[in-house]
Image (cartoon, rainbow, N blue to C red; front, side, top):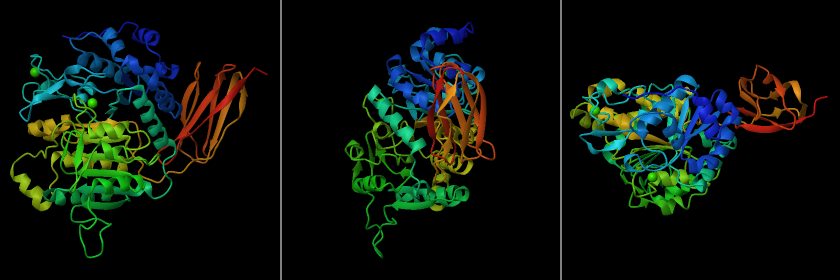
Length: 502
Ligand SMILES: [Ca+2]
Ligand SMILES: [Ca+2]
């Protein structure tokens, strides 16, 4: 039986863990990390807070100290639930890499076993669950049949992602990429360019259908199909003449011509298998496309295996790569299995393109993000929520929900449209004491935030004329940070000096 100590948590956390005042009030982002990376994550937390998503950093050590349970996984789950239920958390960032059996910087969630994964997989979505995934109390978690009453899947209201970083340098490189993604996203056709790659001919029909029947129905982007026998770059009359090679995939990214990328085909932990070549860390090291970071989904086996002693996986390498790679990738932690209710569905997959559980999850991720304005983490959790009935019926779908992770930032908008950079007018300085901060923008409906670290934190929506007025009491010498952000915008931030009272 787990117990949960409610006494003076906020005070204890505030004194033991650096947190912004905003975070103490109401933090929409909860960032869980190791004590060694707290300082490294602070610029990320400050950036998110400044653009309207107040961020609270908690450490695994702090969680161990303040939540009572039989395991660190349970302690993290209780902490996350506390923040969701009592502190306004809408996104959970697991800010560190992990190893097997709860080791590493930020332990993976309870190990879920399955007949297809007898050695078990860490299941991060357990951290969002109001129940503990061990209904029969035998210490074996996530047993599809025996623990069904204690298994709660994500409902999509809270986004989750893991940033599998190991060092302060990794965190700094990742933070730079996230800031560029949110404030300096390319203002051309880039946002509209999606590419599906596929090297596996039996999968062609379903990969085609993912776009034709789903993503294209909700989003007005352009698709490029980079299949072994078909690419937009083929010589006329010579299908397949432009190979899906590692070099060509590097060119695609370095040319800043793909903002959404689905990679379908074989892979192993350290690489993607392409047509007659392999995409490895050496290719990741060639990536230089600062500011133009694609969002990626991939079914390729073990590419998202963040908990292995072998590190980095190819997905981890893409996340950690400075000035290149990606900021959010959905990938399987073990083999990327085509889950179905019955065997005959495989025939329908090959013949008619029936979507298996994994392809369906990734397709729903894109439709939620590009068609319905959800962030990366929300979109993946909604895709999982859409599969709950399947998971109750067939164990394979339960595994499907557990084994696909978002590696990267779960709070990012998915850039369905080409952004504009709003014009923002703010005072250069204000006087201490009771004041009105007026921010004028060219973006009606934008999220506008003001933040004085010593006290003020307020987030509002710009009115029809793009204006927001904040009534605040300002302290001398503590500048006001402001941020303007929104789905179709590159975020703009600035600072207002606070002088002595008049
Ligand atoms: Ca059990
Ligand atoms: Ca790892």
